[in-house]
Length: 161
Image 1: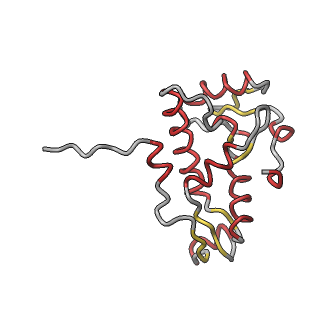
Image 2 (image 1 turned 45 degrees about the vertical axis):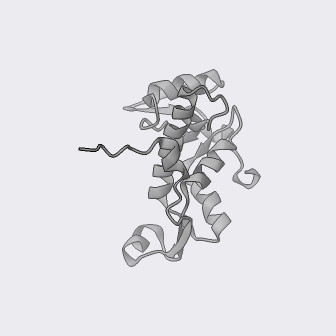
Image 3 (image 1 turned 180 degrees about the vertical axis):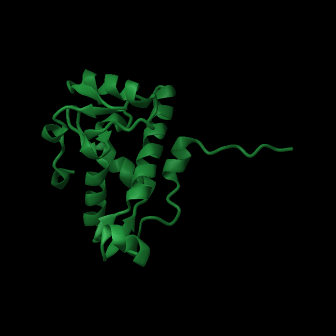
């Protein structure tokens, strides 16, 4: 019985699966997202944006979606795939770091809406809290979530990426 080898995170990141593509927003999706078009980005595109966030700065998934929409002339960036690809980029970065690479994607600088740390990234919220605090951010626990204090002050200008 041969065991199918699983793809590494970096292989998943490199697999663009015929993406990016721009599609019309479906009837069902339009109730939530409005009419127009949605870009389903390639995983690498999400990683490339995350890579550009300098130390001390932050970006949210929604900002990444805006950048992707603008790049592809779409109304919105797909919220689901953008989030999944950011997660893959984070794990690919951690995989590279485990092999001694130093110039990895600083995934901990990519936050969810409202400045919330993504607990699904490697090491969970605790590990990212440490990385963010090392870069001078203050992180507090609100309920079950960790939030970067005054995160808005540190957001990158999407036009500059």
